[in-house]
Length: 200
Image 1 (cartoon, rainbow, N blue to C red):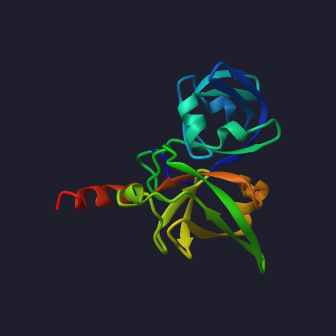
Image 2: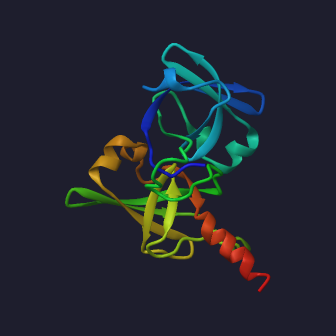
């Protein structure tokens, strides 16, 4: 379980293809605190630490993960948003994030707004999935590349988020531009409510 509060944007140093899987190796400041088998969210995708060497660690993404996320687009030099799992004795500063990416979206516009930025994202709309809560709502929560954000200008297949300078500089939003593919996880609370409404 995660909260969508990114701890660090780690740099990818190697991507190795292994049949249908890829092994992603990254540098980050808290490698020494990680343990083999530990779960860490990568751009919002929960992956298991499988190897540690010096200041780097490696995770493996299987084909199902690659099909649903943007991890297959990573190359050396890419920044990946990292978050370790929540501590149960802490504050929930973002919202409840499972680390299970629902689908990808494409950035269609980046607008500078007097020191902050508005990012517009479009995603494939499916009526059946929307009825199960795979949608955004105005002022609701959405997880983009592992970052808990508030939705504005919500539409059937698109939405905007406002990014403050701190978030821009400390996550991989600094690398997102028009055409960039990002990971989406819709709000789990909305999914449960939508599902329960079907049995009303």
